Amino acid sequence: DGVLTVDKDGFLTFLNQIGAEILGVDRESSIGRHVSDVVDFKPVILDVLKTGKGYIDKEFLVTRRNGEKIHFIKTAVPIKDEKGNIITVVDTFRKIKRVNKMLNELNGAYANFCFDDIIGSSDKIQDCISKGKIAAQSMSNVLITGESGTGKELIAQSIHSYSDRKNQPFVSINCGAIPRELLESELFGYEPGSFTGASSKGRMGKFELADGGTIFLDEIGEMPIDMQVKLLKVIQDRKLTRIGGNHIFDLDVRIIASTNRDLFEQCKKGRFREDLYYRINVLNISLPPLRERKEDIEFLVHHFINKLSVKLNKEIKDISQTAMDRIMCYDWPGNIRELENTVERAVNLCSISTISEEEILTDNMIDALNLKSFSESSQHNNTDILSVNDVEPLEVLEKRAIERALNLSDGNITTTAALLKVTRNTIYNKMKKYNLTYPFKNSLNSIIP
Picture 1 (tube, rainbow, N blue to C red):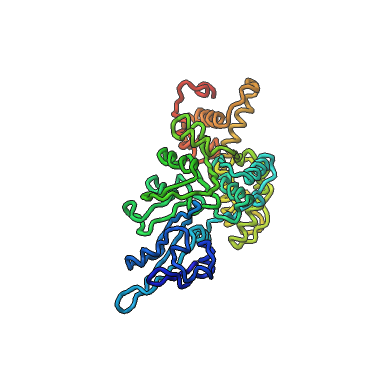
Picture 2: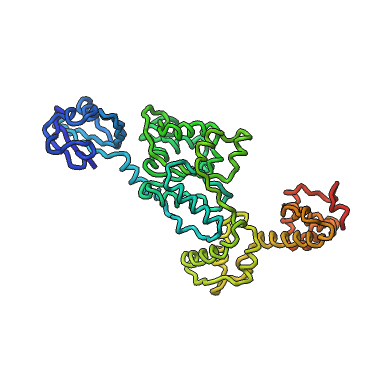
């Protein structure tokens, strides 16, 4: 911390070296001079001499003659004699950026991952890594798109770690997880007493905490329209004003955003601002779902087995080939997050060194694999009346498979579930999903036994 003391008339009696460096003055030549002659901005310590009232951890934004703004957090304590007269004032101060760094260290607001932590050799994931490394060398905004569980924050942290900001904060905020009435204060901060429930000391927002580093706006597609307007202005101006405040803070922040939505379609529907979309989508990285990079599954499974065996204090070394073959057929709708959770479950259940098919497959996975097998079998059995142009999406095949099974069982749910080798609940859920009722109306399968 910088430390200085002044006498009752405002003359400097002490200044430490750190304080001199923060203020940009020579320490030895400053002592003995009036504080207003030492610094090139209005010294707020004079107000303490005038009023006799000190303060603790109060923020100040001062502007030097050259236009540079310095953001301080200060504590000033007046020392009085037995008659109550001020004899000296002790002032401790530090730059807000240093305070932010300490807060970020306490809160773990730094990137933990780099590109070397991304598992996979498929062309699609390697292309994403290449684009990420290019983005890391730029200050342009980045939009990372992809389904839930594909690793969007992993890519964002890797970009930060590969950039020249790697030693600065990486601050993440999930725009969809914070109530809309709190999102503005979380992003931009607020001054003391600016709204009901506000802290008496005020609070810095995520953008201020990320100053000098990177802010990651996760699931930006969930942000309310009114907040999108305010965010756009901050991104354009690289400045912000806290709620209830009038100080304008300059920002030096790299912006990376992510979404699992099609933001272009959201713009067409009026749910996302088009100007904000183009502002954040300068560089785009589209992460593939796991079903489109299945050659990486085996690498990921063994990575998670090793990682989770250590975490859970188990000695699991491998997975059986039968189990691996089965999970390679699964489409992993929850992507890498689902895969890791599935492996963690299997590691917990496994009592020997190799994970078996029974331990890796959940009931939902078995149902999905059986439905997929039945659908593919149904299509194969009708190849005599189908051409290449008749190949249909998997969901259409799944719906037809359920319709056929219902026809064969005369609408009996228990029999239908047995034919498809799934649970009754799965049949009910799928019938609801596809809006199926038995007997069918205007359905091809209603006339096909």
